[in-house]
Amino acid sequence: MPDTRDRTATPVRAAGAALPAAPDLLRTALADARSPRVPELSPYAPERPFPWNAPVAANVGEPGAAIDLDRVLRLSLAAPAGAPGRLRPVPSAGALHPVRAHLLLGPKCSLPPGRYAYDPRTHRAHLRGPAPDGVPPGALVVLAVAASRTVAHYGHRAWPLLLLDTGHAAAALALAGAATAGVLVSLDADGSLLSAAAGLPDAPDWLSTWPGTEPELPLAAVRLTPPGGSSGTEPPLNAWAALPRASAPTPQPGADTTPPPELAAARHLLHRIAQAPGRPGGTWHPASRPGEVTDEALEARRSAPPGELNRPPGNELLARILATARSVRPDGPSWTVAAGGAAPALYAAAPGEPGLDVRATGDARPTLAHWAAGQRWLATSGAVLLAHGCPEDASRATVRGSHLVAGYAAGTSQAHATALGLRSRPIGSWQQADLGAALGDTPGRDWIVHGLALGAPATTPGIPATPPATSAPTPATPPTASAAPAAPSGEEERP
Image 1 (tube, rainbow, N blue to C red):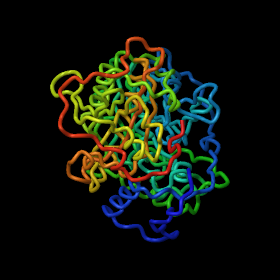
Image 2: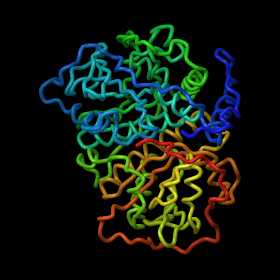
Image 3: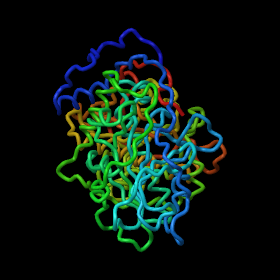
Image 4: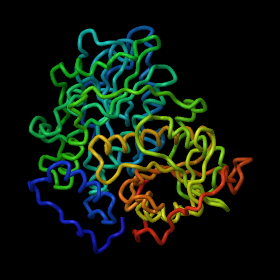
C-alpha cells in the first residue's frame, strides 16, 4: 500500500482509551472506513499455525451417512491444491484468510457427532468435544473471524472486509451443500450464542479465559440437513450452547494478549455488531444454488487477474448474474451493474420482467476505480456488479446484514459467473463511494458496500463487444471520475 503524508488525519486512540458509546462508535467507524484516510503502515502479520491441534478425526461416520463433509468442505473452504499461501480461491478481503469454521455435528454425517475445528490447509477436522444428547441429524457450521492479519493490513478499513469475507464463506458452504442436503443460512444469529454453541468464550472474555491465543468472533452459521430431515425446525444452537466449553486452542508466541488499539477497536465493534438479544437464534433462510453451478464450477472459481477482466459480457449474461445477486436473500443491499463497451451505462433489473433497465447513461467505471481504493484497472473492466445501501446512520443489524448479505450474494454470483464462463474478481474496499449522491439522490443514504468485477473471456463466442441497452436511457448520468476524490493507486485487494 503506497505511503502518504496524511495517514494520521484521524487520531489513533491510545491503548486502554475509552471507546465511544454505541451507536456513535458504529457511525464513526463506518464513516472512517469509507473515508479517504489511508491505513497506517503496520508490520507484516504472518499467518500463525492452526491453533486447534486436538486429535484429527477420521472421515468416517455411521454407515449410510447422508452428508459427505469431505466433499462439502473440499468444495467450499479447503485450500486450493497447488496454491501455496492461499486458502479459499476467491477471498473478498485481501487473501488474508480470516474466517474459521467450527463444525457442530449430529448423526448422519461422515464424521461422528461432536464439535470440531476445521483446518483448511490440511483438510482435516480436529475433535474438540462431544455432541449434546438427542441432537438432530445434520451439521451446523459456525463461521468466526480471526481479525489480526486483516487489521494489520487494512487498519480501520478491515472490519467491513471481515464481514464481507464471512459472507463469501457462508455462500461457499451453502453452494457446496445444496446439491445433496437441505441448507439454511443465518446471518443474524446472536454472536454470543454462536460462541457458546461452538464452545468458545464470548469475545470480551476470550483473552482472560484463554491467554496467549487469538480471539475468534462468530458472525454467521450454516445448517446442513440430510434429505428427508426436518430442515424447517429451529436449529439446535441452544442445545450446543448448554454444553461445557470445548477444548482450548494452543497458545502461540505473538498471539495478542495486549492487542494494538486498532485491533482492539475492530474486535469490540464486531462483537457489538453481532449482538442480537431480541432474537438470539436468528432468522434462517433456505439456500439453493443456480442450476448451472456444478461441483466442477465450484472447483474452478478463482479471482481473475485484472488483465483478464477487460471484455464486457453481453447484457443477457449480466442480467442473469444480477438476478442471482438479487434473489439470494430477501433482505440486504440493492444491486446494480456498471457495464462498459461502446455505449456504457449503469443498469438495474428491469421491473417485473427479465432483463436490464438503464438507470443512467455514461461510463461509471473510472469513478468506481477511484472509489475502490484507487484500483485503476477497474476503469477498463468489462462490468462491475455493485451492492449498495447501508446509510451512514445505519443500525448495527443493518450494517451487519448489509455486508454479510453482500458477501454472500457476491459469492453466489461469482460461482454462477464461473459456471457461465465469465471471469470475475471481488472488490471489497470502497472509499467515499456514495452512489446515491452521485446520481442526484439524498447524500449519505446509498453507499457501495461490495463489488464484483466481471469480464468475458477472449475465447467466448457470441458475446458482443458492445452490449445493447434493453430499454430507453434515462436523462440521469452516472458519476464521473471528476466527482470522485483522488485516491492512491495500487492494488487494495489481493488475488
